[in-house]
Length: 237
Image 1 (cartoon, rainbow, N blue to C red):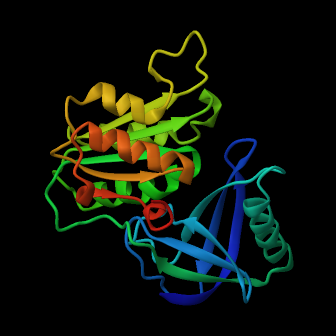
Image 2 (tube, rainbow, N blue to C red):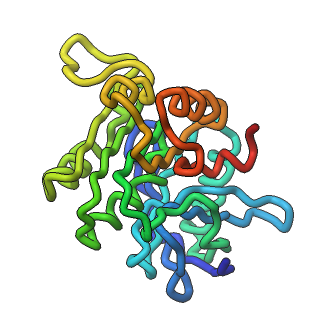
């Protein structure tokens, strides 16, 4: 883990409630695809956010923060970053944390699963796999509540167009009549698309209360527990 000062370069709205934050660390940041950082608000107050940028982007870190009045954890962190941005001062971040980074030594096909802004966790992996020209099969599932929340759909469609072994599947819970893709819960789309998950390495990000049931459903569908990764596993039974 590195403790770094970081300039808040920009804070850009992606949707009504999601913001892209770009941080320029005081020295190159070392992390793996799938790691997160902690924003230090105080000695005993640290807020965790997945790093959306790929590991080769050592001099510019990207975060996606979903913040609303109902989510004080993220909103207070965003306000902290806004204050540094306005004042031209540097935030303190702890970089290179997590136990669920991409296993690059494996050759298993991959399922990347994200709910909401959990997208940032698997985006780093997707971009890294494209950058290293991986020939592993990669299936990226992104679930959101409404179509308007698919703020990076075009980017991920471009990612999937790069190679025949990359697949991007958006899933919308409250879909409009014109939506032609998967609907409902994102992991149910995976269960529908795969006869068995026994052969796959699976990386998951989303609300902790979602990850437990998803894990159990996937195991019932053949997934091997040792090939499933989520930082939430450190906090749930």
